[in-house]
Image (cartoon, rainbow, N blue to C red; front, side, top):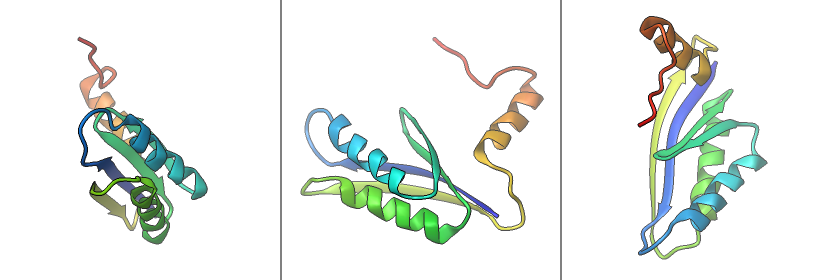
Length: 103
């Protein structure tokens, strides 16, 4: 089984959120998860939903702010071990190229 999630944790604040977002991302290192950060959030992979949710809770709690906004979208692949990279590769095969275009 593989659980893939899109996670976005951010303080509700004026100015840059980078320092607090970095704390949330760093909190994931304490868990047996893989992750990749992008401009809109962090894709997190785990073997089971309990591990994923524990990592997400730690990321949320790592942000030091009066108000924290967390978005979580979970793909719980209960009968498959296909990871995030394989999902991207499948789209790239259909495109016949890398699924990326720089401006």
